[in-house]
Length: 522
Image (cartoon, rainbow, N blue to C red; front, top):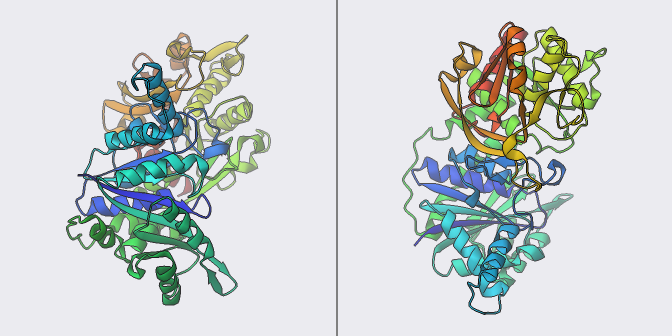
């Protein structure tokens, strides 16, 4: 019999269910419990690959090429595990499988219905992903959403055959000096009406609640006062593990699941405490500019932000991260780079901001500003070098200019597909580093495995001319890394190193960038 911890949310979305689930998983793993996680997204998209960053934040990529919700990035970073596409269940995936089975005649003439066929499929997919002692399940959206109802029913049925602890995250509003519990009461009542009775209540509040409020919620919501957790506002996510640990949340969950949890070591959260202190410390600041396209949404470049933080802890500096749209940059007005120690050009799609990014790359190259280009950033670094160093004036990208010009970046042959979804070069790929270069020194390895997500790639037709002008190009059949030796840090990579960074194991390329920024600022 498996053990599950189901995290639901009420009142509004965006309450931090993902961080709550990740933190619980972290605390369990630090105690020696093997943990995995499942994110349920009730939308009808099959995966997150075709969704705009404005809709749902970044699209996170797994080793097996799964394009998934960004919360799986939280799970991987907090738990230091590698998940698969099976760990992200969407309504689109569920209904597609059910319909495919119906078309194949697998239901033997039965009328196919939400119950039992859809709910059985959901349970089957959850159990398939539950490969460890404890499986965390985060149900996306809020209680009462119509698209989430089949999942609530499936999880209720799952609880009949397995140990399940229900953790509900709800907003506790404060009006003046008074806490208002009515929205939380309503969301729990909605869950109760669906046959689910939360065991643990995590209250998202601006400050700790008092005994009176907890006793009131115990009476009205049928949740033990001892199982009500203050999930208060904190300065950064690295404070949440200690916040939960101090309230003994793992002991309370273990009691519900009848799960033996070993005692923790005294310093088992030290990395998170150190990271939290670092972000609160105003000394040793390093300013990193992320020059992107989707800067209006805080979650668009979430993995990049976390990777900068991880590398900053390794280097013991306080990261000041600026998000600015490339549209703001003009080569003849470089004020955007004032007091900037390093620059990151992230991935992206489309034509907006392309020429401005190329000019920004040129400015960084000419002024010895450390710069790291990721995916599209790598491609634009190659185009900039071709134009301004190799004198290939019409150097361009086939995505932006398909008809004319010298296509330094071309369509990857394996990505020629009429469909939009899952049609890119996706997932973990091997790259061999033969050159004696900064990149090899950062990785301390001849062979690396990194996650890709792109349709376009470097055109090997231009490899010799670029190399003859001083650019190192690294890769096997595909060029995956470029590097300019005579520069403080001018590295681009076709892959996404931000998906591999962990707090305890920061990514080498981000560590190298921060070290170069430290040398610039000193």
